[in-house]
Image (cartoon, rainbow, N blue to C red; front, side):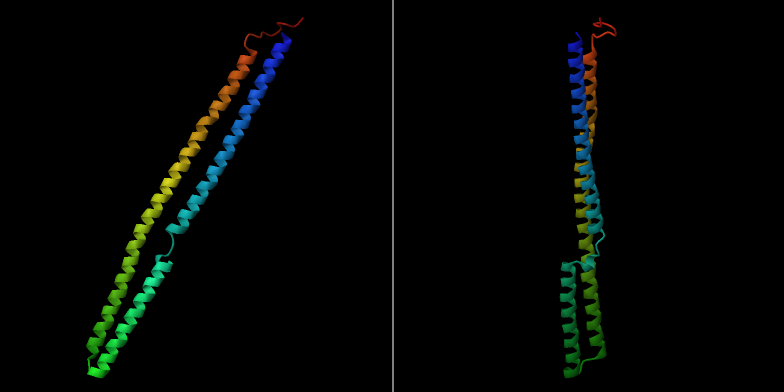
Length: 166
C-alpha cells in the first residue's frame, strides 16, 4: 500500500513538474509576443511620424517640380527680354509656379494621410493578432494547473492518514 501511495505521489509530482514546465513554455511564448508587440509599436511610431516631404518619392517629385518651374520662370524672363514682355507677365508666371508647387506639396500631404491610414490599419491588424495569441496562451495557463491539481488529488484519493502504516 505504501508503495502504491508513493508511486501515486511521485506520479503526481511528475505531473506537477510537467505542468510547471508547460507554464514556463507559456510564459516564454508570452514574452515573445510582448517583444513582437513592442517592435510593432516602434514600427508604427517610426512610420506614422515620418516627415512626408523627406520620403524619397516626395523628394523626387518636389525636385522635378522645382526644376520644371525654374525652367518656366527662366523662359518667361527670356520672352520678356526678347519680345518685350511686361513685368506683370513674369510675375504672373512666378505666381503660377508658386501655386503649382503648393499643389504638389498638398498632394503629397493628401497621399501621406492615405499612407498613415494604411500604416494604422496594418498596426491594428498586427496588434489584434498578437493580442489574440497572448490571450489564447493565457487561457491555457489555468488548464495546466487544473491538470496538476487533479493528478495530486487523484494520487491521494482514498488514502487516509494512518492507514497502511503498521
